[in-house]
Length: 218
Image (cartoon, rainbow, N blue to C red; front, side):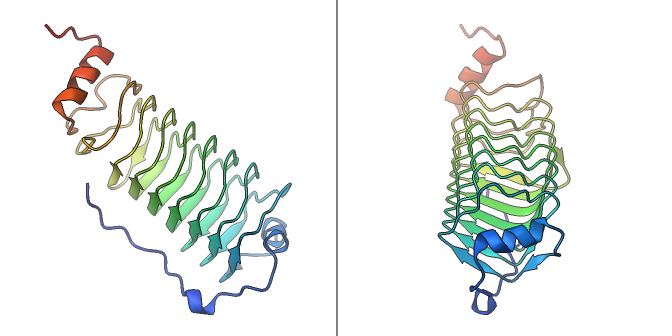
């Protein structure tokens, strides 16, 4: 499904590039105010707590943030390219006008997050948790979301999956009305009942879903 998503408002020519990532994030997570207008490339941060931190207008390229605690982190107008966020703990995080491209999010926990005008492209997010998310203008494009927790979404606007691996993902209590899933792999998805009412699937997918729902096709 084609969607129009507001891109991050990011002036790459004006970004500050001299401060090390770990130092900048330590300041942001230590109550030092919002981190705004920085670019980081190929750096890593370990052992930091970014709970409640705020990043605005930042660009991270090829950075490693795996396993960090970042509950209630707020990202606005940020772009992350080729970053590793595997296993991050980001309960109740908020992302607004952000883009994550070619990032690793496997096992990341974003339960209760707010996603507004966010694009995920070519990301690996297997077994990631986005349960109970509040979403508006969110697109997952060519992402690997096998086994992801996508249940109980509160949709305040449109969202879409295009060319995604959704095998074994849990969509319980997430209404998929209007979703075009024909280009996605949806074998073994978990449903509670009528989540797929009004969604578009192929005939082959319909047969798979019928078996999943206990319908016998003769």
